[in-house]
Length: 362
Image 1 (tube, one colour):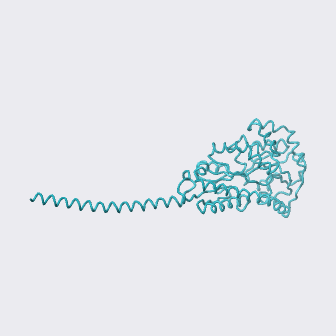
Image 2: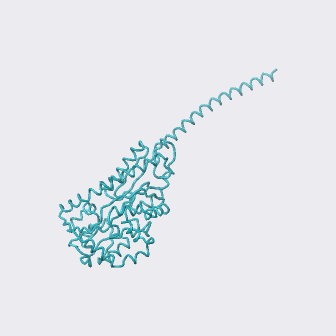
Image 3: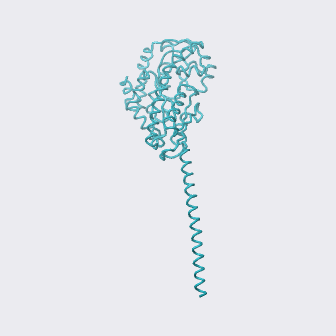
């Protein structure tokens, strides 16, 4: 009898423990659901540029970094900010882009390298990256090759542009989504230069691209590579006599304080390249990718129009600042350049028939 009562008491205790454990299990399940919801909410509201492929829930927010090395409120910077505004609007706030101008995230080469490593999501570099990442195409920035922005657009939308895109994808994990315009490069100096003969012995600051240096040598100049941040002082101190850049950079860099003449040589048309991290872009959901592409297209049209309208404005500002605009016979420069034979020498280092293919697209 005592044994039977003991068994009943033991059974009651077991049932009581089971009931208690069942109650705790229900509470634990509820707590787990809240935790899961909290984790999902965090993922939906913050995804940094160093994150993964970018797929995920429909309410996920993508926070992207965009870097460039041009000054605030330049035409390119305005285009970058327009893109950031457009893509946020078109995705209802699911894509947020922070723009870092003026090389805040490093030099163009540093930023492109960091793009491939996932530190930055979008970079808009200029022709300074050609020699580092696709040297076989650096001939595209040689003087008197590309004749206009329209010609440039044809070049970069041709098989040449496709070849460059493939290299960027393979080398730095970047997609080339658009080509943005820049003003044509013009020569400035403290003397008038109307013909190629006037270039003889001129100490001309140029970029560090070896092919560009050889091209100006062929025209008779004495090209001297100097980093752009040091150029104003170099002109001021007479380290170099002349330089070449678009109207906007001539004005915003205040070269009118140390140079008297602007020669309308219009010798180089080169682009800004809108690059986005390939893994990041490929990982966007279809609706995000569609909105992203639309924002790129609209920002490209906006930026290109700004450049077109601003060139005459900057030209007037340079005149008002005291510079004299000098008309030149561009054909004389082209003729001397072609007769120098420099392209035949340089072509050996470049993509097959590059110059021939470019000129066929005029």
